[in-house]
Each structure stands twice: as structure tokens, then as C-alpha cells.
View 1 (tube, rainbow, N blue to C red):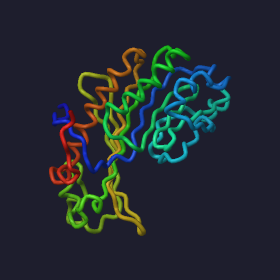
View 2: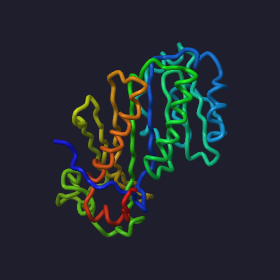
View 3: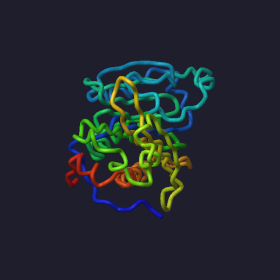
View 4: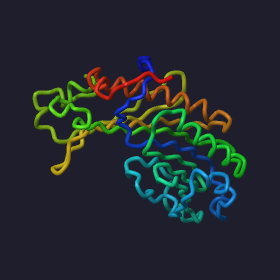
Length: 262
């Protein structure tokens, strides 16, 4: 059964911590062998800052749990692997390029249209300069972090904020004693070979507020033609909104102050 259709909304109190899109392609040695000067010139107005790191080191400012699956580091070294991170002036947007993927990351996501425009510009530059043959994996990942204090819900139990299918132990008589809970499941998306891997759970610490994380990684691993990239990504985005709404209760939805997306 597909995820239930819901009206598309934008939350005034946005719970998104980070959004990542990854386009993975067969290795292009030219990227590993030379500085991406032509690529930088295409994107430098939006991404004036540059950092270089080993190909699969975790980028600064990005939670390690947000990193996509990577090929073994031994292969990266064998290929002379390195990643070039191009950052916006405020460092809230990052475009990462290495011999096997292009990744766009933001900690300032507002709506799909804005993210899509930025990705489209980088994607065009990738195609024109490096001409990848196809994409071997496409991923679009949303990490939502729900903090009750931000929403004026500090005294509301988690089971009233989550759907029954998600609440689990937090809807049991032991709920008040649960300090940490983690789950994972994978859903097939309708009429496609794509999947979404959902990692969710309560994260608590003695010195900070407990928070609920919903981390949804939409991915497609069969070969995808480069011309079809945004057809796939637009579909991922549509399902992402439906999935998040399925995970939460009406009370939490209303507390985040939704307004209709035009």
C-alpha cells in the first residue's frame, strides 16, 4: 500500500536538521587526477569557499550519521581519491565532488523548489564538464530532529506526538523510563525499484533535551540515465513529505505551524 496522500505544507517551525542529495556515478579518473578548476568557475558565485579532504572523510559540520554509503577507503586511496567541498559564504550549503559522486548538503532547507534550483545548476556543470555515463545510485535524505521545547510541547508525552506505528516503546507503560530507542525499516516505493530506509528513535543525553529523530534515506540503485535524474528526485521528494506526515500525529503537525505550499 502506498503512503497516504497528504496536502503539501511548509512548517514555520521546521524540524529539518539536514538534507543531502547524492548522485553516484562510475569513477571518473579525471576528477581525481586534476584540480576541478572549470567546475569551480561554474559554481563559485554561490559557493565561494573551498576545502579539500580525503575522498571519504566526514565533511566538517555534517553529522556522521548523515553520510551516504561509500565505497571502501582502499579503493579511494588507490584512485588517489580526494573530495572537493565547495561551500556557500554562510557555510549552510555544501557541494562536494569526487571521482565517484556529486553531493549537495544543506542545513538550511526551506522547500524543495529552492533545493532543486541549486542542485540543477551543479548538475548541469557536472554533465557539461565531466559527462558521467549514468548514475549507479541516487539518494535523497532528510533528517528531522524534533525537540518538544521548541514547539511548546515539553510536557506532552511522545506517544501523543507520534503515530502509533512509530511510537513503539514510547506508547507502553514503560515510556517514562525509556531513555533511548532506535529502530530501522525499509519500504519499497510504489511502481519503482526505489526504496526508503528509515532510521528513527529517541535520543537522550544527561546534559541535553531528549529529541526524536526521523532519518529517511530515499535511494535508487539500478542504473539511472542522467536525463532522468530529476524525475527520480521529484518522486523522492513527494514521498518524503508523505512519509514524515505518516510518522507524526496531528498534534505535532499543528504545533510545527504548517502552511500550504504554493
